Length: 315
Image 1: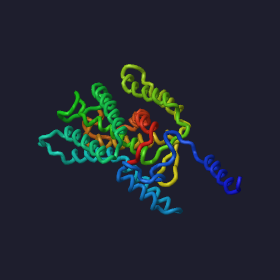
Image 2: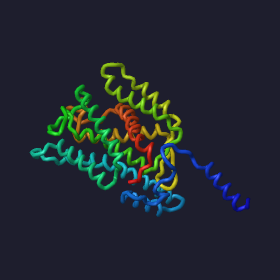
Image 3: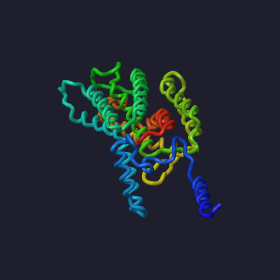
């Protein structure tokens, strides 16, 4: 074998040894492949930002930090718009408006979702998952409001029982964020648990949200099961040119914390209220963070059903 050919083969073998093995899709992303056919305009903007960055030193670190924030903000687009609507209508909705505030929020959320599909900010498969979030969330809302866990005080026509339909879009906002951040940051995983085990855990969490009203609350056991199942799992995400990583359990906690902050904004805007907020707004108890942490497991498993099977065009 010629020396040059031998060096080429050796280089390929060494490259294969160095490359980490990820679960959840092929290696690479739109940064490596250029803007793929059918990608959104944002994918092209993102690719240009990634290509134009400084190479090293503090400026590269700062650029990566800012790019991380930009991508996170873009992934939160649907949830951010929903929070903006909640606050704006709370502050400026006319008391004598011919349309109820809750009905306006429902129609506005639906139009936002249609626009995101029309402008290819979400794929059709992701929209199906978000619809599943809406259904799962609405069922939970019907049950929880019937048992006095929280309440919707304002009137409206677009509702099922005591639950306005816009409430399902708040759960859909979590699904939208996870679906978009998964693509934007090119998620990969190492030591990901078997899918059947994650589905069983998510189902047990969902059932416990209902069953603990009559049966013993197994929340602590579910936290322990989550830790055992995911303690070795790392999520690899790419804010710039290289993948970074963090424990997936830490990622769940950080997202749950931001959802808790968003819930405080929602209750401040009187979109819904807990019993302790009936007479005056107060901060949502930090204990609710545990419920959102468990809800994150359900959300993550639903989104993994899309992104864990197939690689989608970025957007």
